[in-house]
Amino acid sequence: MSYGYLGTMRAKPGKGGEVVDLLLAGIETEPMPGCELYVVGTDRDDPDLLRISEVWTTKDAHDASLTMPSVRATIATVMPLLTGEFGSHELNVHGGFGLGQNRVG
Image (tube, rainbow, N blue to C red; front, side, top):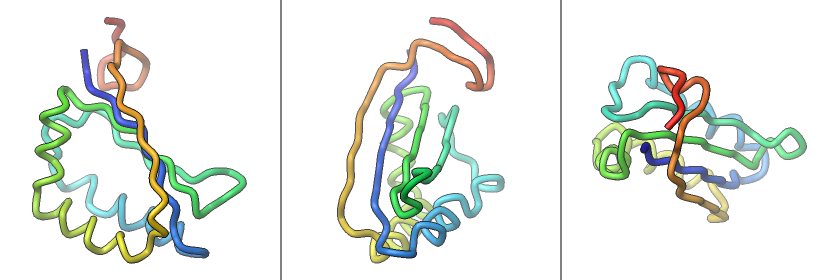
């Protein structure tokens, strides 16, 4: 069973697009061991409300990613652009479509 993380963060007015760009910079070239899915989106009615969906092989893989220098640098760059309003939910991922291999269980 994989580890899932659903998060929200609010960018300062007019900064949502910039935060999205920063969160997505380098994802095609920077290896993220254990990451099965990483999706960044904005609310349709509120472009400064970001929603992030992640699936990792384990919670430990997710936690380890937060110690990577590139991730820490992105966090440091993004934080001043945010209001401090965050939400999160952790979940057990049982399967689905789009996780590298379409799987159930």
